[in-house]
Length: 542
Image (cartoon, rainbow, N blue to C red; front, side, top):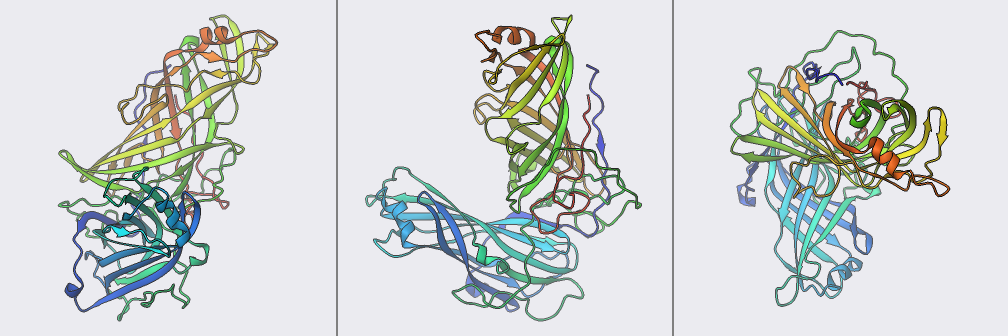
């Protein structure tokens, strides 16, 4: 295996226009009396569907807030008087009365999309409520208030805010104040199908040339607005735009500015306009289908491929181009002694013909140094795959580190030794998932592969190494466990395969391609095919 090569450089041109910088320095809510003239109030009651232990239940979510009529470029837009009220039907109350709850306290997290022209981000409006009595009959009404993030945009144009998914954490208590069993209940809510096109909370004109007058917003009411409004864009994510096919326009990552940091001197945000010369994208190589059946606003997809060494066999085999379906998490700021960290926790699933696995691939080695052996292999995912990204915001440079953790079992489908078939049976596989050294075993227990990607994000210029949405190299070391259930007709081949293949210190290097933002209303053509599959097919690198 050749020595490690320098980390490939992922060139990115500066993004057209400025990005919307979502500041997570939380601002205290202003009381109603403190709302100044020149604001517009939002009072929208929207139909939602909430998933409880008893099943999906209809609910009404009422969102109230106050926004400025308009804002200047670079001016902080701070929502005020924000409250979220969830009204659950009587049929849902049984989920609380069953554990003998007398009162319940709620915490909510509402995803609010922000879009301006082609720029998009998403903020989380968090709230807490006082304990309320669980009614013997009738609806349960829970109201929360709390701090919400401010928004700042570096360009002129209409800023559109849209309500999205809502998470409700319930903490029930008994009549004597003790916790129930279970002590908490997590409820996930999404806008109901008939809420489509009605979830826009406000439209705030920004900058010179913005229309005068009050921005459009749902009229105060206790029901969903009946007047038609333009369909809002799907809830976007505050994520960098990855490298694209040759000749396409590329973008720098959209990174928030932490408190105390200064924006670039052009004053337009974290990115400035610049385009690459036009060109013709390279032909797209063949790749397995990579289709997200039910995308959410946070859905991404990407292809991955690479090499994995088998140390005992003194060789490496190609892991074929495989589809990964990713659900990107909400980015959160974490202030630490060394600076502000932007933490994003995502999940992923391999996808091949409806199964969580790679496509079958063939590997040929000289077993025991002299016998040519060819096997058809598959990597099967046996549990959730986590992707944890940590960006240390040190302007102008930002250091990115991403850990991918995946429980993968290696299956052997067929074997030929010196051209002669060796029947390994239908269930030949490693006895447990592949394992890697885990830097945080308390948080991530169990057997799984660990791959690490490192990158440097330079605002307004280039990105080097790996970032989730841009792709790049991921490396790690893996132990291949012993095999089990190998053989047919009473022949036990477990020890043979274990002796030939299993063992530690097998190097893995995977290359992830640029992601496709499949969950947004109009996926970028330099990221996705017309049928919403990843456009970029990566090539394996040793």
